[in-house]
Length: 333
Image 1: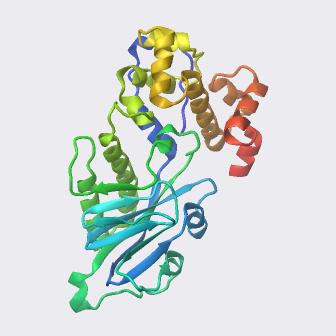
Image 2: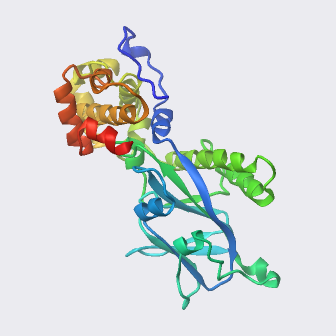
Image 3: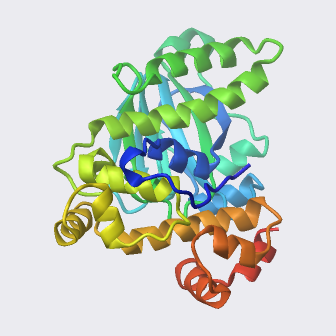
Protein backbone atom coordinates (compact mmCIF):
# COMPACT_ATOMS: atom_id res chain seq x y z
CA UNK A 1 0.00 0.00 0.00
CA UNK A 2 1.25 3.42 -0.91
CA UNK A 3 2.13 5.57 2.07
CA UNK A 4 2.91 9.27 2.26
CA UNK A 5 5.03 10.63 5.08
CA UNK A 6 3.13 13.51 6.65
CA UNK A 7 4.69 16.84 7.52
CA UNK A 8 6.61 16.64 10.75
CA UNK A 9 9.19 18.53 12.77
CA UNK A 10 12.19 16.45 11.66
CA UNK A 11 15.03 18.61 10.38
CA UNK A 12 16.29 18.11 6.86
CA UNK A 13 19.86 17.62 8.08
CA UNK A 14 19.32 14.00 9.14
CA UNK A 15 17.40 12.47 6.25
CA UNK A 16 18.65 9.08 5.05
CA UNK A 17 16.12 7.98 2.45
CA UNK A 18 16.51 5.27 -0.19
CA UNK A 19 15.36 7.18 -3.28
CA UNK A 20 16.10 4.29 -5.64
CA UNK A 21 13.83 1.95 -3.65
CA UNK A 22 11.16 4.65 -3.70
CA UNK A 23 11.10 5.04 -7.48
CA UNK A 24 11.45 1.28 -8.06
CA UNK A 25 8.52 0.58 -5.75
CA UNK A 26 6.41 3.15 -7.54
CA UNK A 27 6.88 1.29 -10.85
CA UNK A 28 5.13 -1.86 -9.47
CA UNK A 29 7.19 -4.15 -11.69
CA UNK A 30 5.90 -7.58 -12.73
CA UNK A 31 6.97 -9.90 -15.53
CA UNK A 32 6.23 -12.87 -17.72
CA UNK A 33 8.25 -15.31 -19.83
CA UNK A 34 6.79 -15.56 -23.34
CA UNK A 35 9.22 -17.72 -25.33
CA UNK A 36 11.85 -20.14 -24.06
CA UNK A 37 12.96 -22.23 -27.03
CA UNK A 38 15.74 -23.14 -29.44
CA UNK A 39 16.02 -21.73 -32.98
CA UNK A 40 17.94 -23.13 -35.96
CA UNK A 41 19.46 -20.53 -38.30
CA UNK A 42 18.15 -18.81 -40.34
CA UNK A 43 15.22 -17.48 -38.34
CA UNK A 44 13.50 -14.18 -37.55
CA UNK A 45 10.77 -13.06 -35.16
CA UNK A 46 9.04 -9.66 -35.19
CA UNK A 47 8.33 -8.17 -31.76
CA UNK A 48 5.57 -5.51 -31.73
CA UNK A 49 5.80 -2.18 -29.94
CA UNK A 50 4.87 -1.77 -26.28
CA UNK A 51 1.23 -0.85 -26.88
CA UNK A 52 0.59 -3.78 -29.23
CA UNK A 53 2.30 -6.11 -26.77
CA UNK A 54 0.11 -4.75 -23.98
CA UNK A 55 -3.00 -5.47 -26.06
CA UNK A 56 -1.81 -8.95 -27.05
CA UNK A 57 -1.10 -9.84 -23.43
CA UNK A 58 -4.32 -8.17 -22.20
CA UNK A 59 -2.29 -6.20 -19.69
CA UNK A 60 -3.83 -3.46 -17.54
CA UNK A 61 -4.49 -0.10 -19.15
CA UNK A 62 -1.58 2.18 -18.43
CA UNK A 63 0.99 -0.60 -18.11
CA UNK A 64 4.19 -0.07 -20.08
CA UNK A 65 5.31 -3.42 -21.53
CA UNK A 66 9.06 -3.86 -21.98
CA UNK A 67 10.39 -6.77 -24.02
CA UNK A 68 13.62 -8.49 -22.99
CA UNK A 69 15.74 -11.18 -24.66
CA UNK A 70 18.29 -13.38 -22.89
CA UNK A 71 20.63 -15.43 -25.09
CA UNK A 72 21.52 -18.68 -23.35
CA UNK A 73 23.40 -20.16 -26.31
CA UNK A 74 24.47 -18.81 -29.70
CA UNK A 75 23.74 -15.19 -30.63
CA UNK A 76 21.01 -12.97 -32.06
CA UNK A 77 20.71 -9.72 -33.95
CA UNK A 78 18.21 -7.24 -32.57
CA UNK A 79 17.13 -4.55 -35.01
CA UNK A 80 14.73 -1.76 -33.95
CA UNK A 81 12.39 -0.47 -36.64
CA UNK A 82 14.38 2.09 -38.64
CA UNK A 83 17.44 1.33 -36.51
CA UNK A 84 20.78 -0.41 -36.75
CA UNK A 85 21.26 -4.06 -35.65
CA UNK A 86 23.01 -4.96 -32.40
CA UNK A 87 24.60 -8.35 -31.78
CA UNK A 88 23.62 -10.00 -28.49
CA UNK A 89 25.84 -12.97 -27.64
CA UNK A 90 25.51 -15.89 -25.26
CA UNK A 91 25.27 -14.70 -21.67
CA UNK A 92 23.96 -11.26 -22.67
CA UNK A 93 20.58 -9.55 -22.58
CA UNK A 94 18.77 -6.86 -24.52
CA UNK A 95 16.05 -4.88 -22.74
CA UNK A 96 13.84 -2.59 -24.84
CA UNK A 97 12.90 0.13 -22.36
CA UNK A 98 11.84 2.44 -25.17
CA UNK A 99 9.07 0.06 -26.26
CA UNK A 100 9.88 0.25 -29.99
CA UNK A 101 8.96 -2.57 -32.34
CA UNK A 102 11.98 -4.66 -33.32
CA UNK A 103 13.15 -7.83 -35.01
CA UNK A 104 15.28 -10.57 -33.48
CA UNK A 105 16.99 -12.88 -35.93
CA UNK A 106 19.93 -14.96 -37.03
CA UNK A 107 20.89 -15.36 -40.67
CA UNK A 108 19.29 -13.86 -43.76
CA UNK A 109 16.71 -14.70 -46.44
CA UNK A 110 14.08 -16.03 -44.08
CA UNK A 111 10.42 -15.16 -43.62
CA UNK A 112 9.79 -13.26 -40.40
CA UNK A 113 7.26 -14.77 -38.00
CA UNK A 114 5.30 -12.48 -35.68
CA UNK A 115 5.58 -12.92 -31.93
CA UNK A 116 1.78 -12.68 -31.71
CA UNK A 117 1.46 -15.81 -33.87
CA UNK A 118 3.82 -17.73 -31.59
CA UNK A 119 2.01 -16.48 -28.49
CA UNK A 120 -1.38 -17.63 -29.79
CA UNK A 121 -0.23 -21.22 -30.13
CA UNK A 122 1.56 -21.52 -33.45
CA UNK A 123 4.39 -24.05 -33.46
CA UNK A 124 7.95 -22.81 -33.58
CA UNK A 125 8.83 -23.12 -37.29
CA UNK A 126 12.55 -22.78 -36.50
CA UNK A 127 12.79 -25.73 -34.12
CA UNK A 128 16.15 -27.47 -34.70
CA UNK A 129 16.54 -31.19 -35.27
CA UNK A 130 17.74 -32.93 -32.15
CA UNK A 131 21.13 -33.80 -33.66
CA UNK A 132 21.72 -30.13 -34.53
CA UNK A 133 20.38 -28.64 -31.29
CA UNK A 134 23.82 -27.88 -29.88
CA UNK A 135 24.49 -25.56 -32.85
CA UNK A 136 21.17 -23.72 -32.49
CA UNK A 137 20.41 -20.54 -30.58
CA UNK A 138 18.74 -20.96 -27.19
CA UNK A 139 16.70 -17.93 -26.24
CA UNK A 140 14.48 -16.78 -23.38
CA UNK A 141 12.18 -13.88 -24.22
CA UNK A 142 9.76 -12.17 -21.91
CA UNK A 143 8.34 -8.88 -20.75
CA UNK A 144 8.52 -6.61 -17.75
CA UNK A 145 5.39 -4.61 -17.00
CA UNK A 146 5.90 -1.24 -15.36
CA UNK A 147 3.20 1.05 -14.04
CA UNK A 148 3.20 4.75 -13.15
CA UNK A 149 5.96 5.48 -15.67
CA UNK A 150 4.72 9.03 -16.29
CA UNK A 151 6.84 11.51 -14.37
CA UNK A 152 8.96 8.70 -12.93
CA UNK A 153 12.52 10.07 -13.06
CA UNK A 154 14.20 6.65 -13.10
CA UNK A 155 12.14 5.44 -16.06
CA UNK A 156 12.76 8.68 -17.93
CA UNK A 157 16.52 8.19 -17.53
CA UNK A 158 16.64 4.69 -19.06
CA UNK A 159 18.11 4.10 -22.54
CA UNK A 160 15.73 2.93 -25.30
CA UNK A 161 17.77 -0.28 -25.70
CA UNK A 162 19.95 -1.57 -22.88
CA UNK A 163 22.61 -4.21 -23.60
CA UNK A 164 23.62 -6.04 -20.41
CA UNK A 165 26.05 -8.85 -19.65
CA UNK A 166 24.77 -11.67 -17.48
CA UNK A 167 28.31 -12.98 -17.05
CA UNK A 168 29.99 -9.93 -15.55
CA UNK A 169 29.40 -9.62 -11.80
CA UNK A 170 29.03 -6.18 -10.27
CA UNK A 171 29.40 -4.59 -6.88
CA UNK A 172 25.82 -3.25 -6.98
CA UNK A 173 23.91 -5.95 -8.86
CA UNK A 174 23.49 -9.75 -8.78
CA UNK A 175 22.38 -10.23 -12.38
CA UNK A 176 24.39 -13.43 -13.13
CA UNK A 177 23.03 -15.20 -10.06
CA UNK A 178 19.40 -14.25 -10.75
CA UNK A 179 19.57 -15.39 -14.39
CA UNK A 180 21.25 -18.64 -13.41
CA UNK A 181 18.48 -19.32 -10.89
CA UNK A 182 15.80 -18.46 -13.46
CA UNK A 183 17.35 -20.76 -16.07
CA UNK A 184 17.32 -23.64 -13.59
CA UNK A 185 13.72 -23.01 -12.55
CA UNK A 186 12.43 -22.82 -16.13
CA UNK A 187 14.38 -25.96 -17.02
CA UNK A 188 12.99 -28.18 -14.28
CA UNK A 189 9.53 -26.68 -13.44
CA UNK A 190 9.13 -28.26 -10.04
CA UNK A 191 6.13 -27.63 -7.75
CA UNK A 192 6.15 -23.93 -6.88
CA UNK A 193 8.31 -22.98 -9.86
CA UNK A 194 5.68 -20.70 -11.38
CA UNK A 195 5.53 -18.61 -8.22
CA UNK A 196 9.32 -18.55 -7.91
CA UNK A 197 9.74 -17.48 -11.55
CA UNK A 198 7.26 -14.62 -11.10
CA UNK A 199 9.28 -13.34 -8.13
CA UNK A 200 12.56 -13.85 -10.01
CA UNK A 201 11.27 -11.76 -12.92
CA UNK A 202 10.64 -8.84 -10.56
CA UNK A 203 14.10 -9.29 -9.08
CA UNK A 204 15.62 -9.64 -12.56
CA UNK A 205 14.22 -6.26 -13.60
CA UNK A 206 15.60 -4.60 -10.48
CA UNK A 207 19.05 -6.16 -10.98
CA UNK A 208 19.09 -5.00 -14.62
CA UNK A 209 18.34 -1.46 -13.46
CA UNK A 210 21.04 -1.65 -10.81
CA UNK A 211 23.45 -2.93 -13.45
CA UNK A 212 22.68 0.16 -15.53
CA UNK A 213 23.00 2.48 -12.53
CA UNK A 214 26.45 1.07 -11.83
CA UNK A 215 27.69 2.40 -15.18
CA UNK A 216 26.49 5.97 -14.61
CA UNK A 217 29.03 8.49 -13.33
CA UNK A 218 28.48 11.88 -11.72
CA UNK A 219 30.28 13.49 -14.66
CA UNK A 220 27.17 12.83 -16.76
CA UNK A 221 23.86 14.66 -16.53
CA UNK A 222 20.51 13.07 -15.78
CA UNK A 223 18.59 11.76 -12.81
CA UNK A 224 20.86 8.80 -12.05
CA UNK A 225 23.95 11.00 -12.05
CA UNK A 226 22.07 13.52 -9.90
CA UNK A 227 21.23 10.88 -7.30
CA UNK A 228 24.93 10.05 -7.03
CA UNK A 229 25.87 13.71 -6.58
CA UNK A 230 26.24 14.32 -2.81
CA UNK A 231 24.43 17.68 -2.94
CA UNK A 232 21.74 16.99 -5.56
CA UNK A 233 21.22 13.46 -4.27
CA UNK A 234 20.56 14.69 -0.74
CA UNK A 235 18.04 17.22 -2.01
CA UNK A 236 16.26 14.52 -4.04
CA UNK A 237 16.19 12.34 -0.92
CA UNK A 238 14.60 15.15 1.07
CA UNK A 239 11.90 15.66 -1.56
CA UNK A 240 11.06 11.97 -1.85
CA UNK A 241 10.99 11.39 1.90
CA UNK A 242 8.28 14.04 2.39
CA UNK A 243 6.77 15.16 -0.94
CA UNK A 244 3.96 17.03 0.80
CA UNK A 245 6.24 19.33 2.81
CA UNK A 246 6.33 23.05 2.14
CA UNK A 247 9.42 22.89 -0.03
CA UNK A 248 11.18 25.92 -1.44
CA UNK A 249 14.56 26.47 -3.05
CA UNK A 250 15.70 28.24 0.11
CA UNK A 251 14.67 25.36 2.38
CA UNK A 252 16.25 22.71 0.14
CA UNK A 253 19.44 24.77 -0.07
CA UNK A 254 19.56 25.01 3.71
CA UNK A 255 19.27 21.23 3.90
CA UNK A 256 22.41 20.79 1.79
CA UNK A 257 24.30 23.71 3.35
CA UNK A 258 24.57 25.77 0.16
CA UNK A 259 23.39 29.18 -0.98
CA UNK A 260 20.04 29.09 -2.83
CA UNK A 261 21.52 30.38 -6.10
CA UNK A 262 24.42 27.91 -6.17
CA UNK A 263 22.15 25.03 -5.16
CA UNK A 264 19.54 25.85 -7.81
CA UNK A 265 22.21 26.08 -10.52
CA UNK A 266 23.81 22.78 -9.50
CA UNK A 267 20.45 20.99 -9.31
CA UNK A 268 19.28 22.29 -12.69
CA UNK A 269 22.61 21.45 -14.38
CA UNK A 270 22.42 17.86 -13.10
CA UNK A 271 18.74 17.10 -13.79
CA UNK A 272 17.70 19.57 -16.46
CA UNK A 273 14.84 20.67 -14.18
CA UNK A 274 14.68 23.36 -11.52
CA UNK A 275 14.28 22.11 -7.94
CA UNK A 276 10.65 23.23 -7.73
CA UNK A 277 9.79 21.73 -11.13
CA UNK A 278 11.15 18.43 -9.84
CA UNK A 279 9.09 18.77 -6.63
CA UNK A 280 5.92 19.33 -8.66
CA UNK A 281 6.52 16.39 -11.02
CA UNK A 282 7.18 13.96 -8.17
CA UNK A 283 4.12 15.21 -6.30
CA UNK A 284 1.98 14.52 -9.37
CA UNK A 285 3.47 11.04 -9.75
CA UNK A 286 2.59 10.34 -6.11
CA UNK A 287 -0.90 11.79 -6.56
CA UNK A 288 -1.52 9.57 -9.59
CA UNK A 289 -0.61 6.49 -7.57
CA UNK A 290 -2.82 7.55 -4.66
CA UNK A 291 -5.73 7.95 -7.07
CA UNK A 292 -5.08 4.44 -8.43
CA UNK A 293 -4.29 2.59 -5.24
CA UNK A 294 -6.40 4.20 -2.49
CA UNK A 295 -9.96 5.37 -1.89
CA UNK A 296 -8.85 8.78 -0.62
CA UNK A 297 -10.81 11.77 -1.83
CA UNK A 298 -9.18 14.21 -4.21
CA UNK A 299 -9.02 16.90 -1.53
CA UNK A 300 -7.18 14.58 0.86
CA UNK A 301 -4.74 13.57 -1.87
CA UNK A 302 -4.14 17.22 -2.74
CA UNK A 303 -3.28 17.92 0.90
CA UNK A 304 -1.01 14.87 1.10
CA UNK A 305 1.12 16.14 -1.78
CA UNK A 306 1.34 19.71 -0.50
CA UNK A 307 -1.67 21.57 -1.93
CA UNK A 308 -4.07 23.55 0.24
CA UNK A 309 -6.08 24.57 -2.83
CA UNK A 310 -7.80 21.66 -4.59
CA UNK A 311 -8.42 23.70 -7.75
CA UNK A 312 -4.70 24.53 -8.03
CA UNK A 313 -3.86 20.86 -7.52
CA UNK A 314 -6.34 19.80 -10.23
CA UNK A 315 -4.90 22.32 -12.69
CA UNK A 316 -1.36 21.11 -12.02
CA UNK A 317 -2.39 17.47 -12.29
CA UNK A 318 -4.05 18.01 -15.67
CA UNK A 319 -1.09 20.01 -16.94
CA UNK A 320 1.35 17.21 -16.11
CA UNK A 321 -0.74 14.06 -16.68
CA UNK A 322 -3.17 15.21 -19.35
CA UNK A 323 -6.49 14.72 -17.54
CA UNK A 324 -8.09 16.01 -14.30
CA UNK A 325 -7.70 13.84 -11.17
CA UNK A 326 -11.28 12.54 -11.32
CA UNK A 327 -10.95 11.49 -14.95
CA UNK A 328 -7.61 9.82 -14.17
CA UNK A 329 -9.19 7.69 -11.46
CA UNK A 330 -12.24 6.81 -13.61
CA UNK A 331 -10.16 5.91 -16.64
CA UNK A 332 -7.77 3.70 -14.70
CA UNK A 333 -10.57 1.76 -13.03
